[in-house]
Image (cartoon, rainbow, N blue to C red; front, side):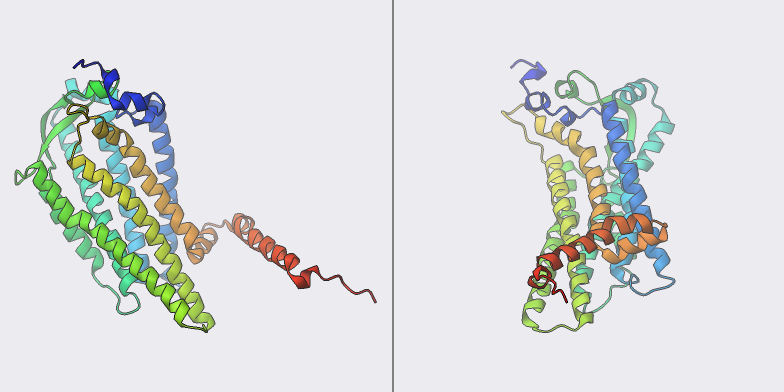
Length: 357
């Protein structure tokens, strides 16, 4: 077999989609940073709006909205720490610098950031599970202490993973075959209990990834319950109708998160179960490394946008909190007015000619 990298699948695809390579170029850094910054701003605005509403209203004091606020800060912390560790591994200039200049200070900083990244990653999955549970049991009983449980559970799983790193900083073995000759690097990391990679996979699959499947099942159950309630009840009081619509919008938000989490779940599975095409080509693993920053940033962005689109009450309060009422009216109120006018004009009464006296 010829070791020329042109034989690998990643180069056949990379000719058309250059961003799949694991090395991060300057334009990719710009894209990731811009999208992340926009997402941070939206996340912070959502959190501030919900927290401020607690002083004047009970509408957003439920465990559901508290989980959303908690999740927003965790999302920002995870994306920031993840991007730093990814840039450290996958930017050529940083890899070259650390290869020849790395010291204990660099190592300690990396270990702390890596631990935060792993910890918040686990919290995201577990918090998503709790949001799904809240949607499932919200009409029966509130959940207390859920944030404390999420943190302790996620911390326990994180400790079982490999987060203790050692010197030296080395280049990835054979990475130049999948990066057009660019050498990327990493620290060697181990777990405190010396758990093998496959055992870490089983731990993650059993304690973290399985929660996503349960979350999706619970979310579908809630959606079915709402649909059934609408069918069985022939009449609705206005309050019941508003409540049903609100429950439906919240559930749709969780469904959107479920879809994104499925992609992250598949991504995590492939990381622990590398596939060699033809017995030697590890392109899928390296393509996954190349797409990693985009998937993580896309998760953050879609999460922030989806809750704004779905929650009308929250969206309205955000625009009012940050004095954007005029923009809000132009974006939403005028569109609603146009729809009403269009419907009235298309109705039989709207089409009737006026009688002249």
